[in-house]
Length: 241
Image 1: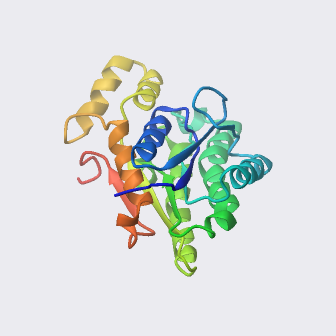
Image 2 (image 1 turned 45 degrees about the horizontal axis):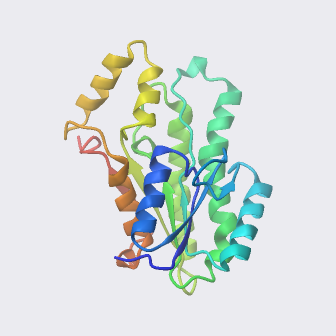
């Protein structure tokens, strides 16, 4: 499995998952292009994924700097833990804008540049919350459900091209780090919530960011050349019951 010389855009690269994905790409010889809303060390371009103009700026810069784009990982995302009555329309729209609109724009705005690649691949970061519902996750569930089916539609369209543009989604459960901590912090008793989440997982532990990153780079690489339109679940058995 190799990504030697392949230029791959990773959004939300400043977070736990984004950093792990960029490291995994580089470890396989690829060239991660890291973007994030907040500029900082390791971030190549500041990037608001909800802005079409910002997407155009980033894609134009990648074309100028690298002359190609072989993959996109639409990783930028936000979570909202709130009851339905406590979810404002503005909060709903913010979650949908980042998670659903941002992923759509990532697929759409990179499409033409990806078609110049030899084996282009899109990986959309989703969640088990795009497959099963959860209390106090109405906005997040809806946004990730949208990403799940957007992925399948993009994959079917990309399969008709020569070379095809593959598109798959990755669905982790509780990833240790800022994600788990953020969910727990929104609960009445964060310590108890943290332990409850852990015990919900049949394997008895949280997912590690590196485990998700390994799956992402597999889907980006030639070893997955016949995989498109699928959802890869990384949940320790959470959705098996």
